[in-house]
Length: 266
Image 1 (cartoon, rainbow, N blue to C red):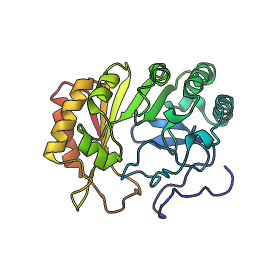
Image 2: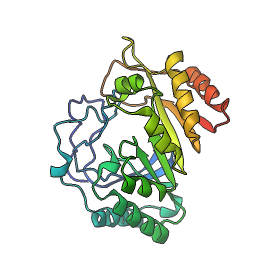
Image 3: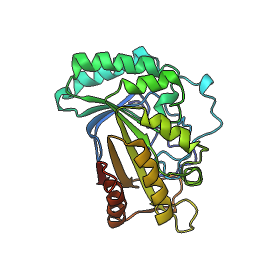
Image 4: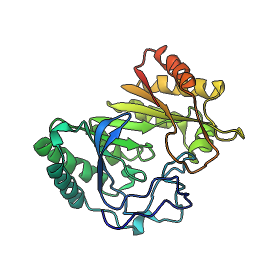
């Protein structure tokens, strides 16, 4: 790491700093265990197709044109991960996780990155699973969808089961029906849902109505697992509140009633 990284656009001191490099960690993730993070986004530049109200990196700078940014090459990514594996206890890693400060599947060479990491993992960290944290916005692209199929775990954000909740929570327009159909075709999907409360009643997604629509959407996907959690760090919209553990457990119980594997993380 070089000099102290910048904070996200429009951020306060509570937000996480943007990552100045490709590899970070290993970190102890509440959902993924001991994970070596892999940031394939341009350094110190948040690039995302969503603008989630709870993002720990702050608001997305929508002025950025992805075509003009300095994306790390697939060779640079594999070299950085290889160097990190030589410094840490690769045998003690649970996962190599494509994540970072934005949406990793926006990388123009995402499929080549996946293939490079698969080969590297086989040589240097065979016990670690290869995962991605994604919002699924690029799943309509055949090359991205096929790359996601080559990963061990595809953790996909789904914070609502209807277009209005997703718009208010993630600030994106999504055709929910076609998205659910595309997700159902992936073999290793783990749905990750972050629930928040908004005292003003504008952005929260844990009401009975919103949860029921979300459970119906999850049931259509039939994912390998469902992860339910709430905020644990600073966020783009500071007024939001964490959802209590007992409410998260009640939400998870609705998922379990559909015969799905679900876990709560706080």
